[in-house]
View 1 (cartoon, helix red, strand yellow):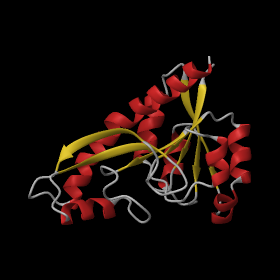
View 2: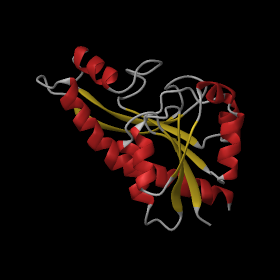
View 3: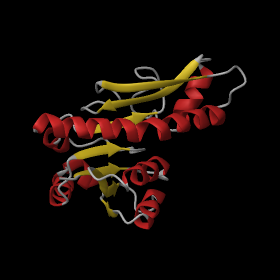
View 4: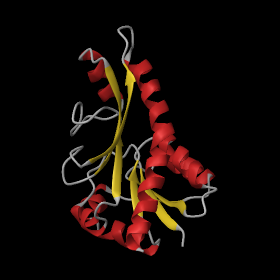
Length: 195
């Protein structure tokens, strides 16, 4: 039976689109829902064009979580992927989906993580700190920003003449290459564990 993924996203949705496209021809896994906290997030347009159902919830809904959980259960969601999602996931969802909610962070956690560290802010901090390398971290989520168990990391060099923009481009390449593969591996492993 095919497993259903929900993507939570707040922004333009390039990672979400990459993940949706990756699973379009997959017989075992599909992205069947995109949820956002922003009605003007471009990820909704991307998902709509690719035939994926979307829902937008208010800040109050995200704090409470019960309406969101009902939508996830109605869609038979097995796994949740955060792709540029900027709201804390409510405890209700953490308990309903233990070890089935993952996030991607555009740096090598535990460095450059935590509340407020997302997107360009991370790359600016990496360059300002004169780091020699950066990369991506895919991790489970818990009650604290960017503190869940690390699943996977990939690195890229930060050169002396790199700007935050050039670092972002390198990190995006890693995101597009690795995130769908890690999701696939985790979902298939969770299926095997249940059998």
